[in-house]
Length: 401
Image (cartoon, rainbow, N blue to C red; front, side, top):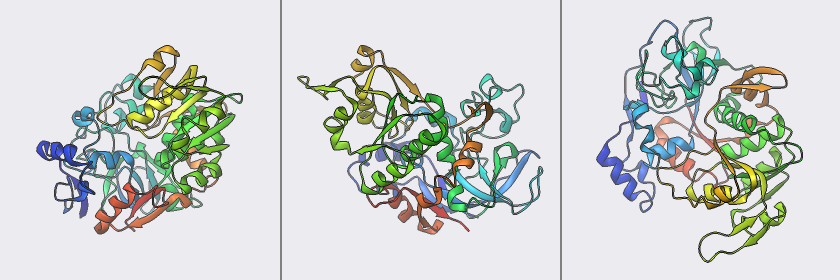
């Protein structure tokens, strides 16, 4: 089968890190770790696994960071290259197995925890339903990998053949949810988890920094699933601003207004230090950082009121130098939120993916997807994903149907 395979090389990684900011589209040049190859279809690790043929597979910000060598080396021991990329996947069951019928549409919950790996007893995180935080991701019946799309043995969504998934990873897609909506369920599940981890109150003001796909979906999840009062989104491009308002933001400001208009909306005063970014006295009750850059992470801390909470949703890069004085001085809580898990919502215990499925049509997820590319057009697809915001797009995907 043809698939997009990531092959890691330390010399190439260092060259990419050194040159990524200087060479346009370096990650799809001759130095790229990503190549379109003929590879065998993965084997079923145990009888509990199911073969799935991808229909659509999204391109995530974490994928782009991996390709441009901007992601942290922290992840190197918990992945197993070479691997087929792609973890935002809607597909169809390829053959009857484990109570699933051939042709059924499914979305894959990519975390590879103890259950998928056949490990008993499960680690405390998996036992609590937080399998994305599994501490056994280098053990069990498949090779190391935090998720499908970063694991050698499972395959991934950027493939014209099949991948394999444990039956516990699969969620059936209802007939009234389109492929276009379903391919965005994985990032929406992440947004659901972030929103329910913080749960802003009706009297609080929340700022969402960043309006890529994750930031926009956080806005939608906050508005639909929590009692969040006022939501202010920082969005750079026109399409992002319009989508943020459609999904539930009360106000939108541009990044250039972070220390001008935004503090006024928050009722904070701005003061200029001798060096560095402005100091705010006052600020938002809660801030969701959905970009992962050092600059916006520091902005998030500065924009938060004393005693408030900053939630890191965007994946941080490899290098981060922050002035943490406002965190210390304001007794601000800093929390990381990763992936998804079990959620308490309206008196019931359910999964982030089940809640995402409920939101798929109300949020009109399909309208956020496009353009779509064939696998052979992967260079154009990666370039389009890198410039999505500037080009007026939200989520770029491979169409494998």
